[in-house]
Length: 105
Figure (cartoon, rainbow, N blue to C red):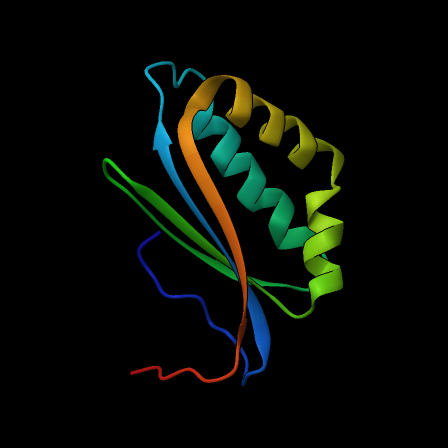
């Protein structure tokens, strides 16, 4: 991603996913692109920002906690979650936060 997400006036929510890849990344990048395609169609999705070097950080933005819960249960997303746990990530963390203020320049 090379642009910042165009988020609305707060409050809204963000999901921060940090990860370290394992040695086996076959299919990882294609699945990542597919997840963005699906998220764009998900009700309540506001945008995404991501960077990957040794540590990957992906921040997705959502209107509500219910929208985040619905995304977590998306069938294809569930498959991606399982592949991540079983194959692609040696370590990962997921954090959810309420954005109360933002400063966009």
